[in-house]
Length: 362
Image 1 (cartoon, rainbow, N blue to C red):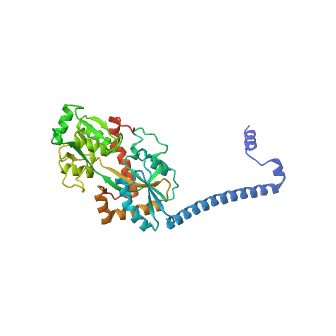
Image 2: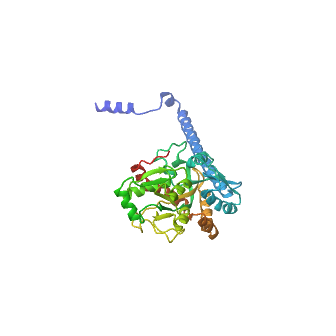
Image 3: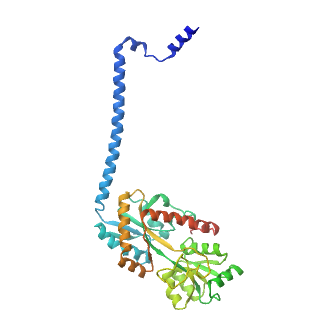
């Protein structure tokens, strides 16, 4: 029995076909074929490695030679506006540093969507840059409709400028202090109205944060732009609004508007004499909105790093800083990595006010 089992075991083991056993040279031919197949596989793997290395080396050469032609800087706002001025404050110096002109190209429309959509489809070669706002990645939370993915379309290059905001009130208001304003808003919900220049914008978001942290409820009045909003606030047609500090400051100093505090963690260098909301007895939060320079996703990292370094050098220059201050901006300094992290922090900061107040882009 044991002998039969051993015989069956040997019978089930793999053995070459009978014809190969009958022809001893076949085994050698099989070994040669196996070696040739292994060699082809190794050569194919080596070829893939060579192609990958060539691509990397080619990319490195391209980054070293960059730029060889003019660079476009797309601004999603009309010419002559504040953000356009900020872009032009660095475009000349950046062009000199790169050895090629940096041409500012205005593409206004749909709150920036026209420009962002266009640049999202641009070649990631470093020759198209775009100014983005800190609320770009918030639009998805506000149920905005896109024909591009904000999270996957851009890579930050450098932060540029921030715009601090102040809570200003009509001189007709009885509340002379922030504490009195908050008390009125709590005791008489919706008695006072709050103006903002567009749903889902930074002014609207600032109201959501302020309301959430103080418990006040105002009646919201949307406007088509900061200009008409400012005029009605000065005229007393509306009661309160968050406004850019540089725009509101002359009217506060002249007594035409009341100042309830700057919505920032510290006093602004633009108006160091003006206290923050927290100093006036209110909530401590930062409602500043800011802008950065970005490139299409896939742009080579050496190009991103060079652009970021050159932009930061420019912003640190006294002449550029003075120009930005005069335009009402606070200059920002941040590496590409720091800028990317700051954009993520914006989502964390504003997601709750957006949800609680059901803020939507209209």
